[in-house]
Image (cartoon, rainbow, N blue to C red):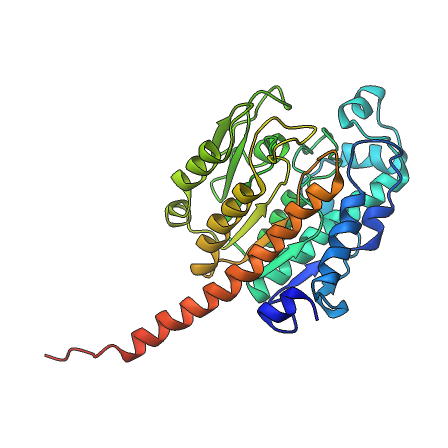
Length: 332
């Protein structure tokens, strides 16, 4: 019996979305961390996750992708006709296999969002490709899974107001640009200023940190806005990009946040949503530690925090409801 089974019962209190093809993508010696997907899955299985805890996504249809991405861009992907400049901006070896990987990740985030609406919380062991714009890819991101999921849920009338909480160390420039003029989508980003992307887009609320900033500066910034942000813009669903790349020593970041700091960040953001019964979608997003075990540890900590917070929120909500029922009613 795994540790989480002992602590939380035989099953996790939520589902995971995962596909084994996530880590089968061949990127050679590229820094893109496909290994972490398998490593996180294996760690969760060792901690008690069962086969029935995992949902397998289908690739997103091109019809769904067109909710966000331009027909011209999608035609280029289908025909393999990206220009050299477009491939250079993508910073990944372009192939049909890469398109399949990203379509699968988009489908995964859509599935996780749908399940979160039913269960209150779902974790996609992938996703968070926030540098993809409507008409081009950038920074390891070919398609914007979060944006497609948001548009699909809204078009189907399942949600109205949406909040995207992006805690990847890099600003989600693609997501910010896609929703820049939308009043029904709130984009929050806390990111490092002096790294990619050099040109930051304008989100609803952007918080900039600088190289060397650690737990104190990071958590002060998070607490400055959470949980009150949920009251100021009450959403129907939250997409939380729980990036592991603010971690000290990340190869593509320069912050000095510890694992304990990331855990505190997760707790603050998750608890605020769950106590308000806001459906929560968690995406792993970035993480590029030289030792992939470090990134894996951070992602698994996010999952474990989610398990604790969901159980705790359910207990507190039940207590709150019981107190309402027990409260005497004044009748003049």
